[in-house]
Image: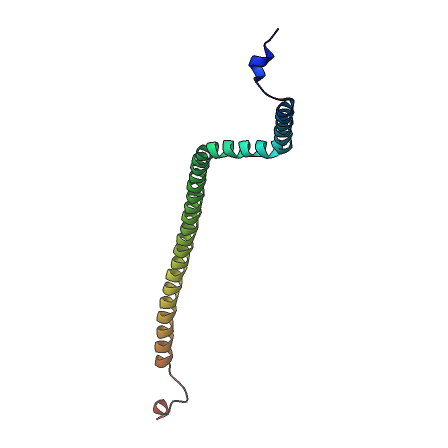
Length: 128
């Protein structure tokens, strides 16, 4: 049989009852606060994993940003090529119009010269 005197010493029954009540309050408090304790443990766990998460997310964002930048540059190059093609087409049309205007101006001069060289029947110099 255990030696209760050695285990409890000179502890009175009132002190033992107070210890039991205190232990019950601590256990009840732990059960009552368990959701908060669980959340605190989850927060600490998340904080421990946060640097690795930030590093992964940063790499993903950089890759995404590079991909978006590449797509933007590609779209800008395609738009520039379309503009150059359009400008070349407009330049070609302007060259054609310039040639046509030059031809029309030469024909206009030729017609005016021919008109000047025609004999006008009402011209007073020819009647005399």
